[in-house]
Length: 130
Image (spheres, rainbow, N blue to C red):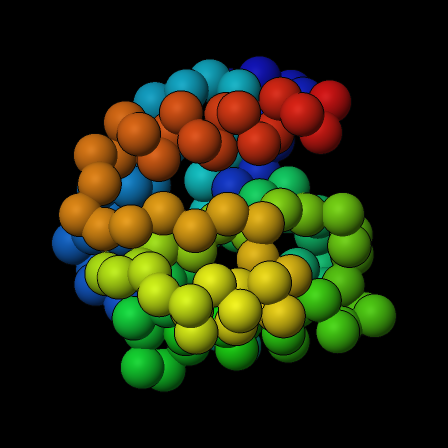
């Protein structure tokens, strides 16, 4: 793993999907992937260590992307605040676009998508940050 690896946090409701996404993202040496099972665990981690990009899911009943993004964007105790957020969703409409913009979500990707497509989008977003 590269010393200057960028950190990607993954918080999705489906453990199988989370494992697949984490595995594909971690296949890139420049990325370090941290998987989380709850919004509380993600927030606790981000208060201790920087994260460059968060992948979350609008369709998560416990930790929907809108709520996760609002909590993260408002939390002044986070270790770093310049992170990107990519949200996954099963459908996009005017309301979801408005909610994504309101919460500070940087990009929305419609499921089902190829995990490799997500990797491309993560790499593209992180390349802009460098």
